[in-house]
Figure (tube, rainbow, N blue to C red):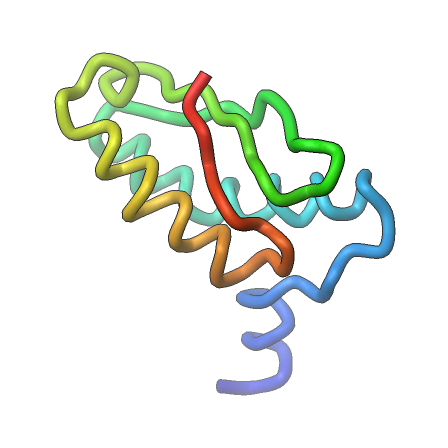
Length: 93
């Protein structure tokens, strides 16, 4: 991997809550096309004050899919935990 690729794939630790939220949104924007390919999407609703919990709303086909918990926990949450320092869990609202 080049430095440019690494910088894109792994956002640096955010200094402020706004920067942390922007880093989360940037990662969601990277994975959004995969959700949209299946007729779904997700919306960042909120981030806890400590930045450890991300609250998302699944939309479209993802909102009512029986497998949405797997998409949320094993897909979205695992990517966010890997790429955004401090994120520990994702909750659906």
